[in-house]
Length: 207
Image (cartoon, rainbow, N blue to C red; front, side, top):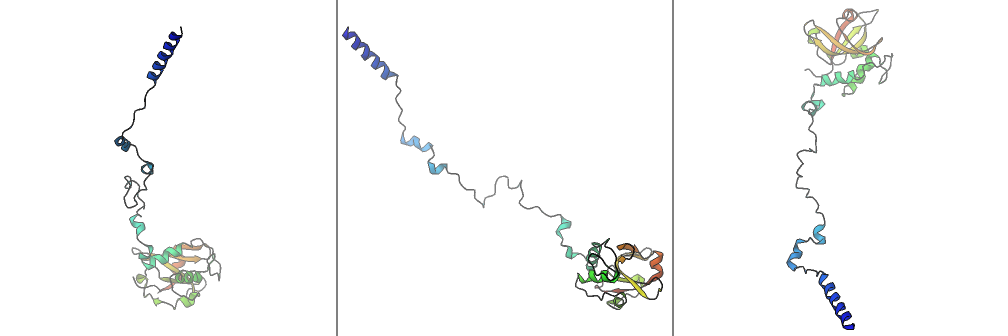
């Protein structure tokens, strides 16, 4: 009986050892396929090397052709007109020098001062400044145009800046500080201005 128990114990021991799987040793050459801790670190991108999608995402938007040209390349007269137009609708007030209110001569003085030209802020005095424009047909944008007073056509009482010229009918549009509408644009063919036009002076260079 004792021999049977010993035999049974030995048999179970052999079976138990046989069922245990032995670990297979890894050859040194096989270890090369597993990255080391240093190799696992992410590498920083090379700033000199563009990414694959660099062409899809431009870093700078190219300006439109018309926007690329600086505004200073426009004629000086047009710059003066554009600046004067920024005050469109500004109320009229006698003696006001701006920028929230203007009378006619202070308006022209303010506009030209922005471009480095000094005018005396009086309509009569401005009529003697700059250069004379010989005739109606010699007008150009940016010229100062003068009109007589309501009660006396011969006496200068109002001034504006020529905006554009209609060569077909010889009239011109001008911007000025109007008593009734503030800074606005009118046409010389209007009966009120047609009857009172006196002359023009040129402050800007000839175009």
